[in-house]
Image (cartoon, rainbow, N blue to C red):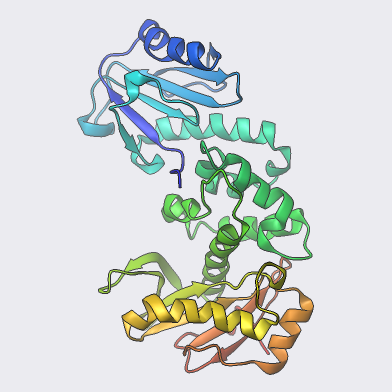
Length: 346
């Protein structure tokens, strides 16, 4: 699995002639490249170039002779490389940093460049600025750009019988709250950056966003990716109003036409068993399980809603969200969260 797009930090003195000899020429020799001025003005005190390769990949490079105290490693002359293409040998030994680690002006300039290119290639994303920004590091990653864009464009982000526009409206409205902005890189990276299309993995990832949305609608504060003493990571810690918290884990059965289970009851029990026989069993209790059935079509969900079966773990919330914002759910065991504002109990 490749990593999401990240910056390379190259300390030292850079000039346009050095960029041309150490960065552009190797790329042009191997891939065919064009070096031009960037589409947007670089940050004050920086110079920058945009490199477009003949194979459609892209790189950005900006540099300064006197980076201030907000720069990496104490500042000083340095360059920043960002690309979903081959890395020139002159940058092989440089350190990689997440977007949030780079100085804000450099990060924001790079995001503007990437977003403009993304919307030029995928005009349908332009109406969804927060979705575009949130998943930018995977939408523009070296190996995952095609697959992650396809997931939203052709598969309605995992919703059955839904249009792309309805699904994107759903996630745009939630992500625009900013609740998960501080965790953008770790959450977006879960979508995957593999060159092979993995709808099951990506749909499961969106289940975590579905649960975050419900918990936010219920007016809880959430923190994702909680390490516990069993060396596992639980999806969320949910802060309750009385100063206490509860842990929440998410699982999402895949649609029935993509699995061996021949009915929805078997599907959710098999999925939950996989979860409970591993990290939840080792944790020894105290985790509320959310089972996201948003991949189920109407008939499959109707069967679950009618029988409301146990799922093999308590407490549990079994729910199905639709792109219009409606969520139906039932619970098993004593759920330590008040969810009346977020779901319709059935």
